[in-house]
Amino acid sequence: MTTSPDNDGLAFDCEVEAPPEKVFRALTVPAFVERWLKPGAAIEAEVVEATPETVRWRWREIGEPEGFVTFSLTPTESGGTMLRLVHVRTQPALQPTAANRNDITMMLAA
Amino acid sequence: METTDVFKALADPTRRAVFERLAGGPRNATELRDGLAISQPAMSQHIAVLRGAGLIAEARAGRHVNYSLDPKGLAPLRDWLLRYSAFWPGRLENLRDLLKEMDQ
Image (cartoon, rainbow over all chains, first blue to last red; front, side):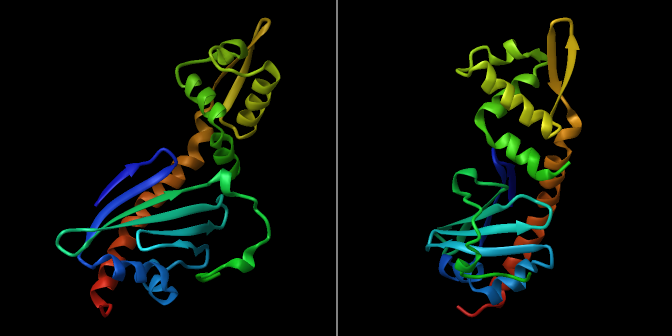
């Protein structure tokens, strides 16, 4: 796995043996996410975008500005997945900060 | 100091440019505007936001006010980066383990 400071946050690249469809489920099915992310009391992750290539979570943490975690899934020749995780702290262009929290498709912990 | 303030302050491209310019050493307001298409009042606003976030400090020198970086202001950003630099690798290892346990 490689880590790189992104202009807006952090990026991680890693290759996993599972195919993209399986990784997709691990990133979008709440019961699976709960198992590997272990979000705890201070963190909330909610899926805001889910396509076969891209899964995006809104990331909330107590005492921090809202952020986004974006996973890019690319199939490898050996049947695995190149997974890129980019965590940014804010996305100003996208933030009406309105109280539309009922639109949530998935919410982890509280 | 709220972390949020630092991130908001640096979310603006002009303020980032000002901040980066000050990384090269102290400047007065005129020098900060040099080469940027921005009015004096707008620059004053940006400076006020950066000061409010604790990112820059000012020192009066005769008729001029010199601005410089305030390294303390970057602590929340550094803390965030350090925390998540440590957080994600472990979680991605968990993900790897889970993928092995999951049915196709």
